[in-house]
Image 1 (tube, rainbow, N blue to C red):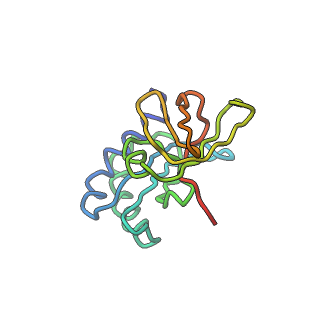
Image 2 (image 1 turned 90 degrees about the vertical axis):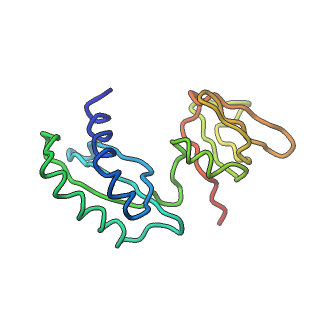
Length: 154
């Protein structure tokens, strides 16, 4: 596991009791470098959506814990955020939540002359994702998928 993945995983462990107390869900944790600055980001959600106040609650509760643990030697900015509407499906619960709903899949390389597909999520396992497009089921290898997220219809 990389240093960044280790730091994100440790943050997931530390924030778990706070999220449980407030009935929030951790969508993702990341430790990334952007424009020369390191960021430790937690993306949280709840039924009905996350508010700025919810993010502040988690941030204020985590600040002293991160200060005490002091496990990241680099200078970084800590952020708590909503995953947004276009959040990718990453974890098992993301797939479960979106079963039967339309999802958008973007592939790394063209499949049948296309790189973007939209259809109802029918099935998934550790290696594949199946969506229904019209009357046809299309199976994608997860290794071919650059992005999968709930389709947003405006």
